[in-house]
Image (cartoon, rainbow, N blue to C red; front, side):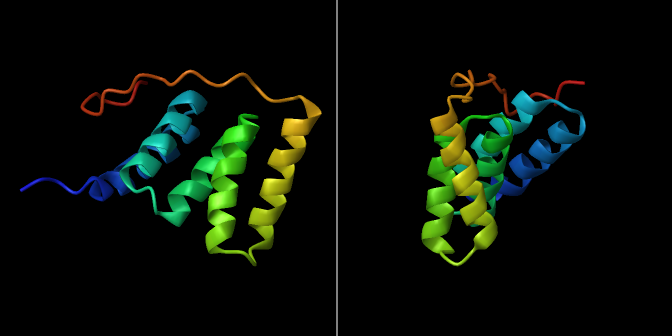
Length: 112
């Protein structure tokens, strides 16, 4: 039987939280991306990814995530504020260059 990729979602989200606590922002962002890859229709994973992208000033990608979330929760004021912040960042010219993805071996331990 083939494994369901969505089953890895809690692991990727947990890894992202741990990396955030360790101030490993690039790993945290990559783990959030992996969570969305594992479960592309998971609202919480996409919102978390949007928030990480916003914090890293990767506004174009953040806008994509927040728009997806708002299409499912159109009355969420916090999401609307996040989308406005990301859109403003895009237009202010403060966006970071697209982050290179950190190569992650899913069988490797989290770096210390």
